[in-house]
Length: 133
Image (tube, rainbow, N blue to C red; front, top):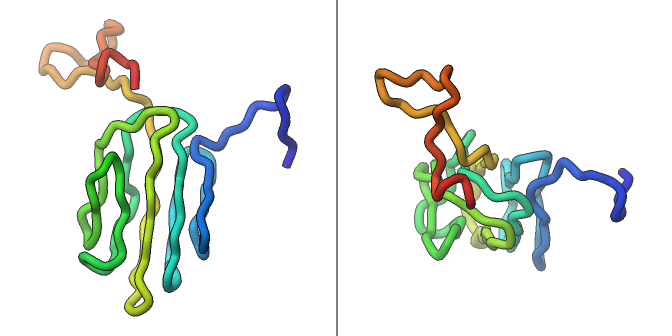
């Protein structure tokens, strides 16, 4: 595609690492679906927000995603975790069993309040950290 200082990009993560394998970034999402052995990927956040886990199935304790110093594996991904611009998310798989993997997207930090009397139609919204992620 095109890039440069005058071109807008839709990617909200940068990908790097010594063995990126099946790691991928696409729009607001990052993933490693049907991942391989010994993957070592780093996803750098380009636009902050809340993580929304579309799928997450890894080998518990061995194939690990780390967000903000917290490790995730098995079927418990980082749902609703706030990330900021520049944060590093790391993924490492070991040399044996591989599972389905994960796909995670970043969403807007502001959502309509879930107060019964407020459906968001009046413009009232609840924002994590005041909307500054």
